[in-house]
Image (tube, rainbow, N blue to C red; front, side, top):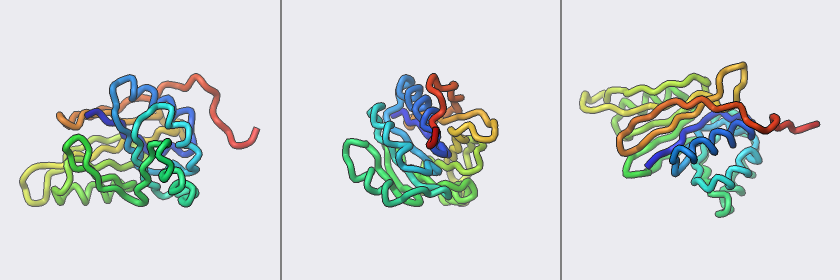
Length: 182
């Protein structure tokens, strides 16, 4: 099963849609959003890509009540997990948390196959050895999909069976950037 891991979209609908369109074209079957969606409306148009979307909120929470309402609408394909998510996809145990330091600490436990995080807008794919000395957990930080601060917008794409992931640059969207006020 191929998955798209994205984080820190910060209301940039244009980059989110560009990433989802690219990920779907590359075979992604689900999306994990590691937080900082900010305003829930950002996710509303994601249903056009027909991909299940697992979301946590991060430190820029936005309107959590509306996020919960959107998740209750089966047509959106959104599962809102709150602050963190513990799930199973493609036969793998996955955990989503916004903060990289928590992700690295949780990886030491050996409880999960993959831990996804975001927050610092820095791409990183790292295998962290378990504290007990047997095995390792993969930690994936896809960077930021927002393009904030002139940082290249990115997401991660990977295959759960092989546990091979790569960072993908998000192409400049064809659409003008979305603004709240014109």
